[in-house]
Length: 302
Ligand SMILES: O=c1[nH]c(=O)c2[nH]c(=O)[nH]c2[nH]1
Image (cartoon, rainbow, N blue to C red; front, side, top):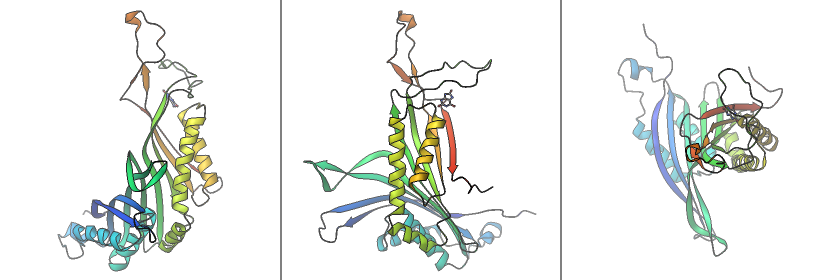
C-alpha cells in the first residue's frame, strides 16, 4: 500500500512589473519586477491517488490570483506581498492548509543624469536578485520567512590569503598571503521569532524592517569583502553573519553559501617567464563551496 508523504503544486515563473507613481508628482516613479512561484499544500491527496480533480484549484487560477492581487495590493516589499498571497490562498480555500511562496525581484535602480537620479529611468544590475521564501501552515500557524541576496558577483584582486591549513600526503595547494578572491554571494537571513502571524509581516514591512535588513546585509557583505584582509572564505563569511546579526535585531540567523571561484596564474615557464604575477585564467570548475549558518548564542534550536 502506498501513501502520499508530501505534496505541493502551483504556478512557477509568474512574472510582472509594477509601476508606482508618486502621488504628488506622477512622473516620479518606482518599478518592481518580480518572478513569483506559489505552491499550495492541503487536502489534495485524491487528485494524486484517485484522479479526482474536484479539490484542485487550477494552477491557472493561481497565476490569475497572483496577477490580480499584484495589481490591487501593495507589492513593496516582496515579503509583504508574499504574506498577502499566503493569507489569500489559505483564507479563500478551506482545504488549502498552507503555502510555499517564492518571489524573486530583479534589481532595477535609478541612475544619475546631470548629477541627479532620474525620476523614471532605471538600469538593470545584471543577474543579482533580491528574494523571499515564505512558508505558512494555517493549522500549526507555523510561519517562516527567509529573504536573500543571490548572484551578487564580486572579485578582489588582492587582500585575500589562505595559509595554515591542514597538510597531508594529498596536499598540493601552496599557501598564499596574496590571492584573488571571487564569489557569487548567496546570503540569506531568517525571520521566525518575530513572526507570530501573517499580520506581523505587514507591521514589520510598515516599519521598514525587510528593506532595512536587505540593505544592511548587502552593505555589510560588500564592505567586509572589500576591507577585510581575508584569512579564508570561512572566516570572512562568519564575520559578515556576525555583523548582520548585530545590526538586524529582527532576524534569527544568517546563512551564506559562497563558491570560491578560483583564478589561477598562467604558467609561462615554457617561454622562460618565471615571474608571472598578473595574468590569470578563470578556472570554471571545480570550485570551492563554503556554507555556514550563524545564529544568536543561547537560541540555537536542536
Ligand atoms: O578560503 C578558502 N577556504 C578553503 O577551505 C579552501 N580550500 C582551498 O583549497 N582553498 C581555500 N580557500
